[in-house]
Image 1 (cartoon, rainbow, N blue to C red):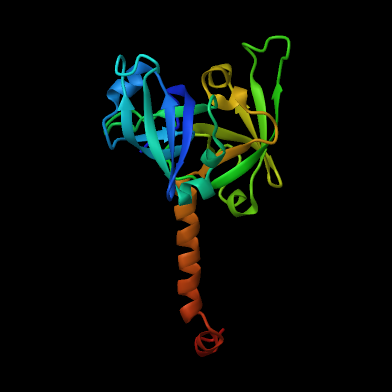
Image 2: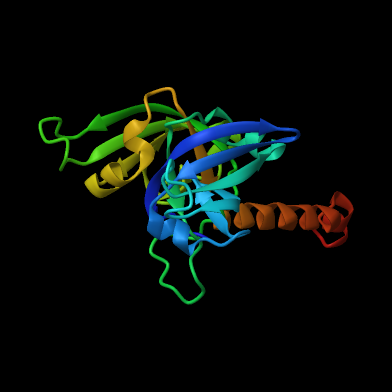
Amino acid sequence: MFTGLVETTGTVLSVTPNEGSTRITVAATSSLVRRLRLGDSVAVSGVCLTAVDLQADGLNPDQPPNFSADLAQETLARTTLGHLAPNFTVNLELPTPAGSPLGGHVVQGHVDGTATLVGVTALDPSHPDTTDWRLRLELPESLIRYVVPQGSITIEGISLTVASMAGRTVEIAIIPHTWASTSLRTLPPGSSLNIEVDVLSKYAKQQRETDKRSEAKWLTAAYLIANGY
Protein backbone atom coordinates (compact mmCIF):
# COMPACT_ATOMS: atom_id res chain seq x y z
CA MET A 1 0.00 0.00 0.00
CA PHE A 2 1.09 3.56 -0.75
CA THR A 3 -0.06 6.96 0.47
CA GLY A 4 0.51 9.14 -2.57
CA LEU A 5 3.33 11.08 -0.91
CA VAL A 6 5.95 11.02 -3.64
CA GLU A 7 9.40 10.37 -2.20
CA THR A 8 11.42 11.49 -5.20
CA THR A 9 11.40 11.58 -8.97
CA GLY A 10 13.34 9.32 -11.28
CA THR A 11 14.48 9.47 -14.89
CA VAL A 12 13.69 6.79 -17.45
CA LEU A 13 16.95 5.37 -18.79
CA SER A 14 15.53 2.86 -21.26
CA VAL A 15 12.34 1.23 -22.52
CA THR A 16 12.92 -2.24 -23.97
CA PRO A 17 10.10 -4.23 -25.60
CA ASN A 18 10.24 -7.95 -24.86
CA GLU A 19 8.02 -10.80 -25.98
CA GLY A 20 4.72 -10.20 -24.20
CA SER A 21 5.96 -7.35 -21.99
CA THR A 22 8.12 -4.22 -21.86
CA ARG A 23 10.97 -3.56 -19.46
CA ILE A 24 11.70 -0.07 -18.20
CA THR A 25 14.84 1.00 -16.35
CA VAL A 26 14.61 4.03 -14.09
CA ALA A 27 17.45 6.00 -12.53
CA ALA A 28 16.69 6.92 -8.93
CA THR A 29 18.42 8.23 -5.85
CA SER A 30 20.88 5.85 -4.24
CA SER A 31 18.89 5.98 -0.98
CA LEU A 32 15.77 4.64 -2.72
CA VAL A 33 17.59 1.94 -4.71
CA ARG A 34 19.45 0.72 -1.60
CA ARG A 35 16.14 0.13 0.18
CA LEU A 36 14.72 -1.93 -2.67
CA ARG A 37 15.06 -5.70 -2.76
CA LEU A 38 14.45 -7.99 -5.71
CA GLY A 39 10.70 -8.50 -6.01
CA ASP A 40 9.76 -5.44 -3.95
CA SER A 41 6.91 -3.18 -5.00
CA VAL A 42 7.56 0.37 -6.14
CA ALA A 43 5.05 2.93 -7.42
CA VAL A 44 6.12 4.54 -10.70
CA SER A 45 3.89 7.52 -11.50
CA GLY A 46 1.11 5.84 -9.57
CA VAL A 47 1.52 2.32 -11.00
CA CYS A 48 2.53 -0.46 -8.61
CA LEU A 49 5.40 -2.36 -10.26
CA THR A 50 7.81 -5.09 -9.18
CA ALA A 51 11.55 -4.43 -9.10
CA VAL A 52 13.21 -7.18 -11.16
CA ASP A 53 16.74 -5.80 -11.41
CA LEU A 54 18.70 -3.47 -9.15
CA GLN A 55 21.87 -1.55 -9.89
CA ALA A 56 23.13 0.18 -6.77
CA ASP A 57 26.10 2.52 -6.40
CA GLY A 58 29.32 1.31 -7.96
CA LEU A 59 27.95 -1.74 -9.79
CA ASN A 60 27.99 0.04 -13.14
CA PRO A 61 30.16 3.16 -13.29
CA ASP A 62 28.53 4.17 -16.57
CA GLN A 63 25.04 4.43 -15.04
CA PRO A 64 23.51 6.06 -11.97
CA PRO A 65 21.72 3.86 -9.39
CA ASN A 66 18.66 2.35 -11.05
CA PHE A 67 16.04 -0.38 -11.01
CA SER A 68 14.09 -2.18 -13.72
CA ALA A 69 10.49 -3.36 -13.87
CA ASP A 70 8.41 -5.26 -16.41
CA LEU A 71 5.18 -3.84 -17.78
CA ALA A 72 2.45 -6.36 -18.58
CA GLN A 73 0.10 -5.80 -21.51
CA GLU A 74 -2.67 -4.83 -19.08
CA THR A 75 -0.41 -2.15 -17.59
CA LEU A 76 0.45 -0.80 -21.02
CA ALA A 77 -3.22 -0.66 -21.99
CA ARG A 78 -4.54 0.93 -18.80
CA THR A 79 -1.82 3.45 -17.88
CA THR A 80 0.46 6.05 -19.41
CA LEU A 81 3.60 3.95 -18.92
CA GLY A 82 3.37 2.65 -22.46
CA HIS A 83 4.22 6.17 -23.64
CA LEU A 84 7.41 6.44 -21.58
CA ALA A 85 10.69 7.18 -23.34
CA PRO A 86 14.26 7.83 -22.19
CA ASN A 87 14.68 11.05 -20.17
CA PHE A 88 11.02 11.13 -19.08
CA THR A 89 10.51 12.09 -15.42
CA VAL A 90 8.46 9.73 -13.23
CA ASN A 91 7.25 9.94 -9.63
CA LEU A 92 8.54 7.28 -7.23
CA GLU A 93 7.22 5.99 -3.92
CA LEU A 94 8.04 2.89 -1.90
CA PRO A 95 5.29 1.07 0.03
CA THR A 96 4.30 2.42 3.43
CA PRO A 97 5.42 0.10 6.29
CA ALA A 98 2.67 -1.16 8.58
CA GLY A 99 2.18 1.17 11.53
CA SER A 100 3.51 4.24 9.75
CA PRO A 101 1.50 7.47 9.72
CA LEU A 102 -0.69 7.82 6.62
CA GLY A 103 0.13 11.31 5.45
CA GLY A 104 -1.85 11.18 2.20
CA HIS A 105 -4.66 8.67 1.65
CA VAL A 106 -4.91 4.96 0.88
CA VAL A 107 -3.36 4.42 -2.55
CA GLN A 108 -3.13 0.93 -4.03
CA GLY A 109 -1.10 1.67 -7.14
CA HIS A 110 -3.93 0.17 -9.22
CA VAL A 111 -4.60 2.76 -11.90
CA ASP A 112 -8.27 3.04 -12.87
CA GLY A 113 -7.70 4.91 -16.11
CA THR A 114 -6.17 8.02 -17.61
CA ALA A 115 -7.21 11.65 -17.79
CA THR A 116 -6.15 14.47 -20.09
CA LEU A 117 -4.27 17.47 -18.74
CA VAL A 118 -6.23 20.52 -19.89
CA GLY A 119 -3.92 23.16 -18.49
CA VAL A 120 -1.83 24.43 -15.59
CA THR A 121 -2.00 28.00 -14.28
CA ALA A 122 0.27 29.80 -11.83
CA LEU A 123 -1.74 31.96 -9.43
CA ASP A 124 1.13 34.47 -9.32
CA PRO A 125 3.22 34.10 -12.51
CA SER A 126 5.73 36.66 -11.25
CA HIS A 127 6.78 34.25 -8.46
CA PRO A 128 6.81 30.79 -10.08
CA ASP A 129 8.92 29.24 -7.30
CA THR A 130 6.58 30.20 -4.46
CA THR A 131 3.14 30.47 -5.99
CA ASP A 132 0.34 27.94 -5.89
CA TRP A 133 -0.77 26.35 -9.14
CA ARG A 134 -4.12 25.25 -10.54
CA LEU A 135 -4.18 22.03 -12.53
CA ARG A 136 -7.20 21.25 -14.72
CA LEU A 137 -7.86 17.82 -16.15
CA GLU A 138 -10.66 16.06 -17.96
CA LEU A 139 -11.68 12.66 -16.62
CA PRO A 140 -13.42 9.94 -18.60
CA GLU A 141 -17.11 9.41 -17.92
CA SER A 142 -16.36 6.06 -16.27
CA LEU A 143 -14.35 7.73 -13.48
CA ILE A 144 -16.08 11.03 -12.81
CA ARG A 145 -18.77 9.28 -10.73
CA TYR A 146 -16.12 8.42 -8.11
CA VAL A 147 -14.87 12.00 -7.68
CA VAL A 148 -16.33 14.65 -5.35
CA PRO A 149 -15.23 18.19 -4.41
CA GLN A 150 -12.73 18.16 -1.52
CA GLY A 151 -12.33 14.41 -2.01
CA SER A 152 -9.08 12.54 -2.54
CA ILE A 153 -7.71 11.57 -5.94
CA THR A 154 -4.36 10.16 -7.06
CA ILE A 155 -2.79 11.80 -10.11
CA GLU A 156 0.48 10.35 -11.41
CA GLY A 157 0.93 8.73 -8.00
CA ILE A 158 0.38 11.98 -6.07
CA SER A 159 -2.27 12.19 -3.36
CA LEU A 160 -4.24 15.36 -4.14
CA THR A 161 -7.52 17.02 -3.19
CA VAL A 162 -10.22 18.01 -5.65
CA ALA A 163 -10.80 21.77 -5.45
CA SER A 164 -13.75 22.06 -7.83
CA MET A 165 -15.63 20.25 -10.59
CA ALA A 166 -17.54 21.32 -13.71
CA GLY A 167 -18.87 18.41 -15.73
CA ARG A 168 -15.93 16.12 -16.40
CA THR A 169 -13.36 18.88 -15.78
CA VAL A 170 -11.68 18.68 -12.39
CA GLU A 171 -9.50 21.38 -10.86
CA ILE A 172 -6.73 20.60 -8.39
CA ALA A 173 -4.80 23.04 -6.22
CA ILE A 174 -1.05 22.36 -6.28
CA ILE A 175 1.20 23.79 -3.55
CA PRO A 176 4.76 24.92 -4.43
CA HIS A 177 6.38 21.88 -2.77
CA THR A 178 4.34 19.43 -4.86
CA TRP A 179 5.02 21.42 -8.02
CA ALA A 180 8.78 21.45 -7.39
CA SER A 181 9.08 17.84 -6.18
CA THR A 182 7.06 15.87 -8.73
CA SER A 183 6.75 15.30 -12.46
CA LEU A 184 3.79 17.68 -12.83
CA ARG A 185 6.09 20.54 -13.79
CA THR A 186 7.35 18.55 -16.81
CA LEU A 187 3.96 17.70 -18.35
CA PRO A 188 2.56 19.90 -21.15
CA PRO A 189 -1.17 20.40 -21.80
CA GLY A 190 -2.63 17.41 -23.62
CA SER A 191 -0.57 14.92 -21.61
CA SER A 192 -2.23 11.75 -20.33
CA LEU A 193 -2.26 11.31 -16.56
CA ASN A 194 -2.61 8.14 -14.51
CA ILE A 195 -5.68 8.33 -12.28
CA GLU A 196 -6.56 6.22 -9.24
CA VAL A 197 -9.83 7.25 -7.64
CA ASP A 198 -10.41 6.88 -3.91
CA VAL A 199 -10.89 3.16 -3.27
CA LEU A 200 -13.49 3.95 -0.59
CA SER A 201 -15.72 5.53 -3.24
CA LYS A 202 -15.50 2.37 -5.35
CA TYR A 203 -16.53 0.19 -2.42
CA ALA A 204 -19.40 2.57 -1.63
CA LYS A 205 -20.66 2.40 -5.22
CA GLN A 206 -20.44 -1.40 -5.27
CA GLN A 207 -22.32 -1.66 -1.97
CA ARG A 208 -25.05 0.66 -3.22
CA GLU A 209 -25.49 -1.36 -6.42
CA THR A 210 -25.57 -4.61 -4.41
CA ASP A 211 -28.27 -3.18 -2.14
CA LYS A 212 -30.33 -2.11 -5.15
CA ARG A 213 -30.11 -5.58 -6.71
CA SER A 214 -31.12 -7.13 -3.39
CA GLU A 215 -34.14 -4.82 -3.09
CA ALA A 216 -35.24 -5.58 -6.64
CA LYS A 217 -35.61 -9.28 -5.81
CA TRP A 218 -38.32 -8.78 -3.18
CA LEU A 219 -39.73 -5.31 -3.87
CA THR A 220 -42.25 -6.32 -6.55
CA ALA A 221 -45.77 -5.20 -7.47
CA ALA A 222 -47.18 -8.42 -6.00
CA TYR A 223 -45.40 -7.76 -2.69
CA LEU A 224 -46.73 -4.20 -2.51
CA ILE A 225 -50.32 -5.30 -3.25
CA ALA A 226 -50.15 -8.10 -0.71
CA ASN A 227 -48.95 -5.69 1.95
CA GLY A 228 -51.60 -3.05 1.35
CA TYR A 229 -49.65 -0.53 -0.69
